[in-house]
Length: 98
Image 1 (spheres, helix red, strand yellow):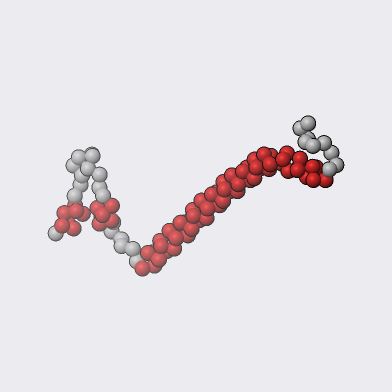
Image 2 (tube, rainbow, N blue to C red):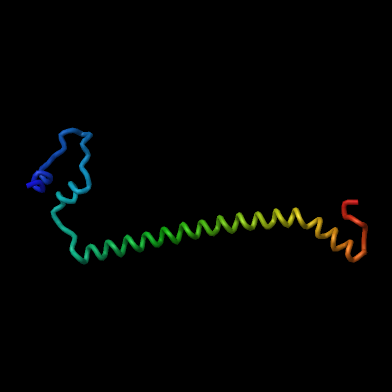
């Protein structure tokens, strides 16, 4: 009874938006087992493609951030490293900045 009412119901008010169950109930054909498996397979494949794409983008962002951090540390620490190595070998001025 309720199903018949739902199937024959036509929204009177344009703001009365049908819900998914109304659309499914109005649909004449039902999914067969093959249709459901194909749908599930397609949904899974598309979800995995999206996850792979998002993960690849995240990895690239992480790599870029780490590369930038390493270069920043190298720029900051290299002058001190050079001064120390030169001092240890005694082959030059006390500091490169002198």
